[in-house]
Length: 289
Image (tube, rainbow, N blue to C red; front, side, top):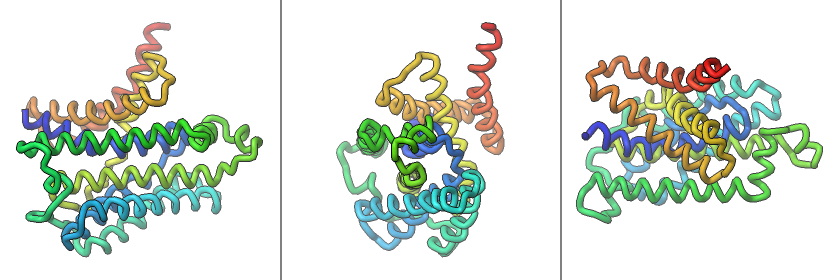
């Protein structure tokens, strides 16, 4: 049961990265690999500031700004220098490895004995329940803000940029600025996941972001599969399914460990599970036809 409880809490921590991937890949159709670097950036900034006994409330806006700048840099390279978005993300991700290592000063920063967001607020006595409540509130607030943004005129212009860039440009919208803003927002959310997971697990590691994009992508693919199956068009329900996808993804990994699969094979299982989710709608379609 501990596996599943931890998976649930981790799923909530990864909800922000799932929302970020949803914005970059499903709204803007940009495969943003900056994710691996900005996730670690959020964790590195959090760990260093916590180790200097700074408040998690002060760290939060710092992490958002740091992640946003990383995403904006990718957007600028893509739009201003006309470099392929995938390559731009890889370049920034590679550069962020050195940036993160410089920020941390070493490859691993333990946070034993330091205060965290989950220890400062004690709503209930049980620490796991307390963490669950705080994470739930945090995720709900983020989702409401993103949902509200996507329903505004600015958000509609963002969505239109991904759906039909030429049309929205003809209406006078600066699509380059939209892409830069969207990637900044996506990576700010990704950094937020790093902020949460570092406080949850109690340490930051320079390699914590390697392959993390597959977690967000898997969560979004699960959500997209459900959205397509049920033909959902409502923005709020779509965002809720993205959050559910993040939790489901972690629960599947927890089940894999619970049945005795070697932890060394976890990345392989993760890749296989994402491949299965991607292939399932196509296999179903093939059988139907």
